[in-house]
Length: 181
Image 1: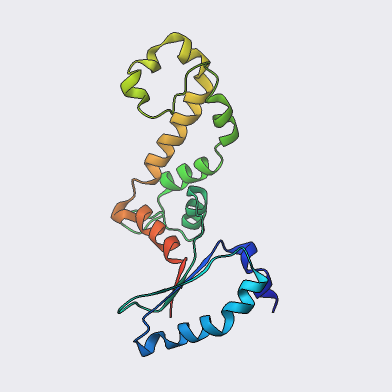
Image 2: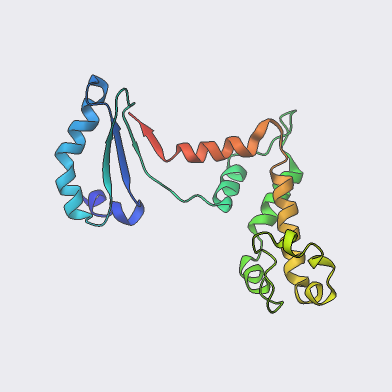
């Protein structure tokens, strides 16, 4: 079957969960046992793992690397940016669209514009508390600071929605990785 051969091109791994004593897990165990050899032969580098445990709920999971851009596209496509009265939150929609149009390659390049200084190094504010006021660094990193501050402000607006709308949308995408059986 073609989907079996292309499995490793689309998923990094598959985890199967089951309880060996539970009748509800018998389907997962049976499927895994009868298909493992063929799947492993067709996808030799792909981990196919069976995890068993007492009272485990039968499930199949994978890992999908969702990024902020994926989450924002999902929220825009499904109209998740809503105010408490149910109306579309135009401020958060605009911030999400602007964030999606951020020039990340320029930000990555401009981050290194001040020789010997990294504005995103760990503990930068503790080690160099006044770095934003240093005229040389400020001049060297002007474009970086403009773009990075704008993206930070956009993300702050995006995450400011009521009823944890951003966190709830993240959870929806995380659950896309799990199939309960």
